[in-house]
Amino acid sequence: MLGFNEPEFLKQMASAVALRPQIEELVDRLVGEGFDNLLLVGAGGTYAQMWPYEHLARRDSTLAVRAAIAAELIASGDASLGERTVVVFTSVSGTTDDSIRAIEFCRSKGAYTIGFTGYPDSPIAQKVDVALVSEPKTWPFDTQLLLFMGRLLSRRGEWDGYEEFAAELTDLPRILVEVAGQAEPVAAAFAEAHRDTDYHFLIGGGNLWGFTYLYSMCILEEMQWLRTTRVHSAEFFHGSLELLQEDTSVIIFQGEDETRPLTDRAESFARRVSKDVTVFDTRDYPLEGISPRFRGLLAPLVLDVVMSRVSKHLERVRDHSLDLRRYYRVMDY
Image (tube, rainbow, N blue to C red; front, side, top):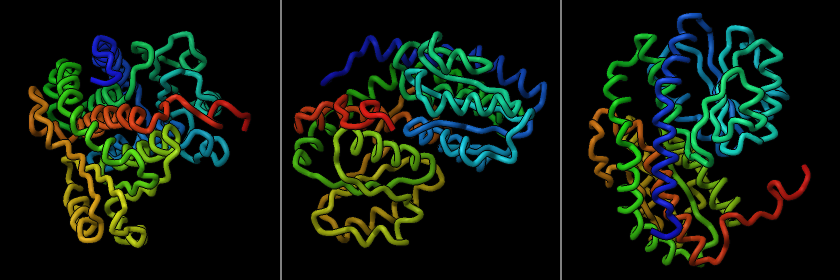
């Protein structure tokens, strides 16, 4: 597979799964001590990656849980933020400036802070109350967040099956390598067909809306300098559909949760207008070893692996490095 270091990937994913005992011990302690609300704080991609877990909690729990943008949280504050607040941060490098400042802000309000990162000596790992450290460069953080939220909802009596689900995650590294291999020819074909496409229209919903936002902004825009529009499938018929034309590249991310019919509806309309509609559907991947009842929870993680293959092939056909930046961490702002 193009640019895919399988041993490193397996090591990283295994390190995320291996955090289960630490995550469970932490969650059990927090539940035992009691807290009133949970903030999931990030910046850019790590903010978008919190949305599936806000969505999960909103659907299944009475606990107050919300995702927040680090810089906005500092600027606007949050009336619920205080000594009975738990705040979760994620950062691959552990050096994201907005998140570092948000940790300091939350701690100044008395909140308990948790950080997931790959570097134990990084500023974020050093500043939070507790750091849960995986292998360096481990991405995405969905495994850790699924274990955290799953255990939390289970302890609150709001989700059955956590033990079975967590046990099945043990084989997740192998499963995701199989996903990557199956996605490789699909990714190569998409990239070849769109080497000269300079605008993409992305649609997703449910627990894939965060990934839709992330892939549009953090990959196609930031890493490939391509213009995009991103819209939630439930909002597709309220404005953005007017941008569709016969030659518009439409990318649809389809998952397996209760919002699937909303994305089906958007896809049906998009195909009536555009002749260039591509659907990346998690149902296309067997995920052997994962029970049907849990497949939908893994949709963001599965599509992250699938679209990482697309990204590498876009990098190849467009001769545009995924590491190239004009402004991000290049200029002061």
